[in-house]
Length: 167
Length: 297
Image 1: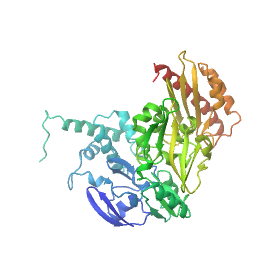
Image 2: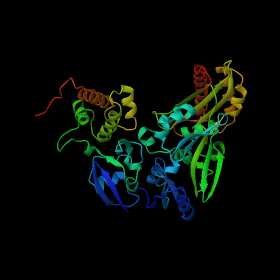
Image 3: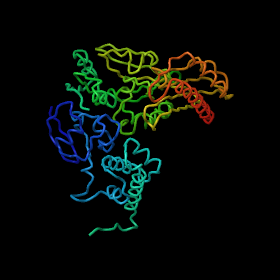
Image 4: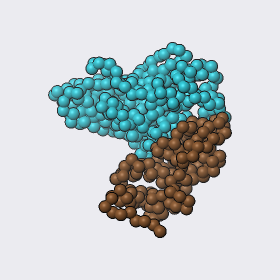
């Protein structure tokens, strides 16, 4: 079947078998390998992408179901080649990862959380990432990263403080 | 973890979906797919045809119907759980459903999962099924051109098994609205929050002006093959203050002869014991919440 997917703002027409998951389509057809295949039955959250801004498990959706939605993968968060988004930067700074397998999904989930809630409590951060399993970190530094990103994003919105410009 | 091959159709109306269901051998409805797709990935389900109803607008709605006495909330089968979770009508009129929805899977699965999908899947630990049975909801379906409705307590017949005919499409679930001064309670025990419950209990209580229980609905989930409404307990406690000791004795007696599930996570004895405790807590919470509700709505 032919399906048109809108991924990170670009439209891709792909031929897929109906049984091809959105995850496999992103990885194998569109070569967007930032969405990771973990359990492939909806438990681990490593395959999380944003569908119209909301975190969704791309292994539990078939590519043929995904036309017409705005799909965002981790590749779509970077402001430019070789650059990190503010949240990605916060994950680096607090070392909110070890092996990194769950990290793209964690960052997308954090992105969706902070888009709707600029001042999340620790409990809200923990709840937001509760569907994403990390087997390395014990989560503490992931929560720290999201809190740091939230703090910096709030700072960006304060007009009194001039944004720091990078060379 | 790759599903077997199938044909995919996305009809634009319920009529079309029902016609496709009637003519296709081994067809399954898919809406959110949050329980069906894992089963397909594990090849526990191998439908030859998938009929996608997720975008049929007529199946996604929440509306209050009827006059003061006997008014109801109708929820379309393809209404997503995240919509139910935030809906003002559900919060105001069905506080028990609003209370349990955050416990249904995780936010990313509630973003796609539907209320009808959870009911049709009939997992013994499902929170939405527990609320449907506890509140005496009614399930509506279409088969071909005919419609049918059945009480939730008769809909579920075993783990992952319902009386829904294979060629029928669940269309809506109807919840009764209780009148004034109600409170709700819900508790569940699981290994991690939002994982499948080992035991759960839901309660809704209406109080009279003297603080006595005018009406009680109490149900337990995850401990029996289908959610169980404890009508005898409710009857014995109406007209009382539902004191903790009385509730405990009544629930314990009600569960004495009931077949309780067991698996490697939780034994029969554990589930029975925890179900009693959770039922006591849920009812106590419901009563306390009703007491805080000062006046008739």
